[in-house]
Length: 178
Ligand SMILES: CC(C)(COP(=O)(O)OP(=O)(O)OC[C@H]1O[C@@H](n2cnc3c(N)ncnc32)[C@H](O)[C@@H]1OP(=O)(O)O)[C@@H](O)C(=O)NCCC(=O)NCCS
Image 1 (cartoon, rainbow, N blue to C red):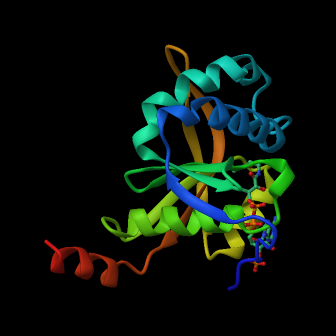
Image 2 (cartoon, rainbow, N blue to C red; image 1 turned 45 degrees about the horizontal axis):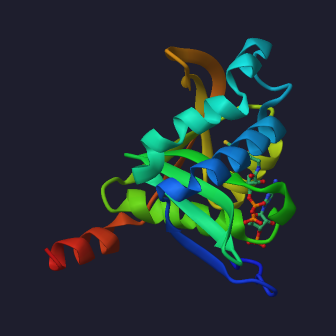
């Protein structure tokens, strides 16, 4: 499977830092609206403003990888244990391989410790579901996902997607380097 070449600017992945909080929150907000409006209970919308995302980013920085194009943050991924918790790409650069690079990186991180990765996606987010399927993820059934909101969680009906990871080589390499 090939990733489209990003010809005009260089795509880089790096760990997120505190300087990225505002940019991540903006990508997250806009991507969340694109992928979720009309597909999640309407009440969740009131917990998904820019300030809500800004508050959620700092506690995830250690788990977050950003994608930059020409130095600009254009996407991010959060991997928590065996879960791809978030993967979002700015609308202006979708379809250019940024999501693929992030997802591959997230899978690699998880493969260091787990055989199977999982994520939750709302049933109506057909673009994301097609993207995951394209990369070998499969629908493992319905789940109620506990989406974080200020002061608690909000239960969202989702599909659980999983992918079996080629973990052996990664783990062997990690062991070999102590
Ligand atoms: C889903 C998302 C992350 C994908 O990122 P992207 O940068 O547009 O995806 P890419 O350009 O890297 O796509 C890579 C490959 O997946 C394929 N692909 C992308 N979307 C697809 C779809 N809906 N169906 C089938 N294939 C798809 C592309 O054709 C490409 O294939 P190739 O590598 O063989 O050429 C992006 O659309 C996004 O941010 N959406 C809004 C936020 C969202 O819904 N996030 C997920 C929440 S669960």
